[in-house]
Length: 462
Image (cartoon, rainbow, N blue to C red; front, side, top):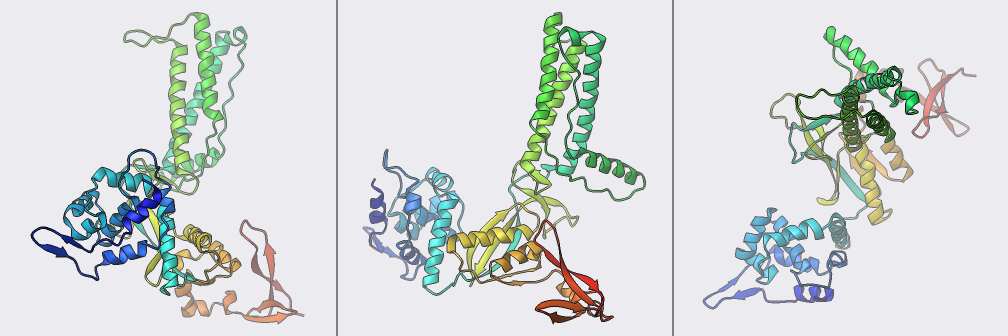
């Protein structure tokens, strides 16, 4: 079917009544299904229709499928089997489908393959622009907040960075011992000059020294019953390390073939020293590759993930039915709202809200240009990085400071060491502070990873 025919077929005025031979059925004139179809008439579905081809058999109208899924969500129905049932029995769904009865396979294919995130975002932003024309939203201010939603993953399928670092340290000790045994085998039996093989040098993984220090300290703390230190050093295993182990295996295989030493695998047969070293190196290589894959999945921004949902991170949730601070695989879901309308949604696996503010604002800037003027959020978003971003982009910030409640206390207000409690003066358009003793405190810049920060510095008054 031609793509233009989809528009003509679905947005045809049609009848709002379905006549049966024995009675007449109709639903109220103010039913939301009419509003939905009227709004959809002004949307551009070119992105959705681009996922379909004009060749082959004609399937269900994609615009009709989108209308059915949207109307089902408006009524709180998300299960596909329930939507299929409503298309057969509910009058509003029958009116949307014009009597067609899409099956569950059609909905699954539409939701999983055709209705992608990019298509859904584009349709949602078109609807937001429509709301802006109606005067319901301005797109100039956002109220941002988030919550943690439990992932559909096993609760006890966790992988911890600290645990991997601990076992990696033991594995490297084992590999180091195997390298020593390999070199001893070459020199004691004269294989090195015979096959032109040199000594094997143990590879080095950056950051393991710090891991070993933490492991040694934790062993001391365990004896004194003190709390253990976190061992979450970010380790990156390069691709050359497993290749070094593979190179030793090839050398052992070369020696075994040259000396006529067979590799045996059945019971009752004694394995040679070369075969035992070969198999031990193979087992260590597999474990090293497994740890390398774990680090790649985890990345550098988090310290855990779930085996059954690789993108979920273990965090503490507000609802803790066991009251023991249990960690669960969850996602950090952020929403940006204006006038009760959800403008943006953002899903992250970050444990805190610090790193979620800027991606939401960049998303708004990309879609609606530089229309944003105000941002309101709680103290969970207060960080130097976020405040500098808002200042540089000319966005008014209504974000509660993390020490806001503490600043209201009398002890804080009477603390003479805080620059908030000092008087400020101007000298040649430069601001400085006057401490409790009347000395001047001037700002100077200090180089950091973040942009320069003004710090107070004592200087004798003239």
